[in-house]
Length: 168
Image 1: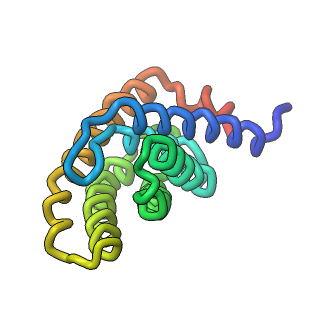
Image 2: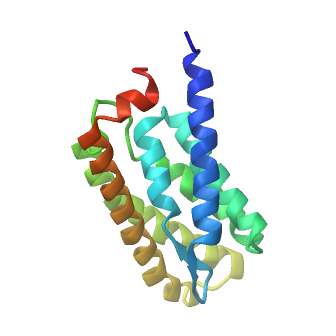
């Protein structure tokens, strides 16, 4: 019998790599950084993994993406924001698309937009200029949520969550 922690670590490693690749290489540049759908994969990881592993996926994937694509200045903010976002979703229950996970997309958007606004304001000492980045953050959250819902509903329809976690 496989150890559940080993299984969770392996799943977390795969999700971290996926978050990195999708964030770093499938993005649209903006004036403040870039828009990506990597957050949708963080949401999915948080629906499968216990919270410490899900937080590691969010923080690790974002850290790798920022540091390896020339946006290292954003890494400290991304680590905190993406780890916090993972806490909103739950892996409890047999379905990924539980009521809590549907509702979690709203505060996830607020944490993303608000977190990057505050981080940029503190970084540059200007609380007006970062307001221009809020629409991009909201767009990122919406597109990530679309990816999350599409994959989450598919996983639920195929009853794949229990297969992926091995019933753990």
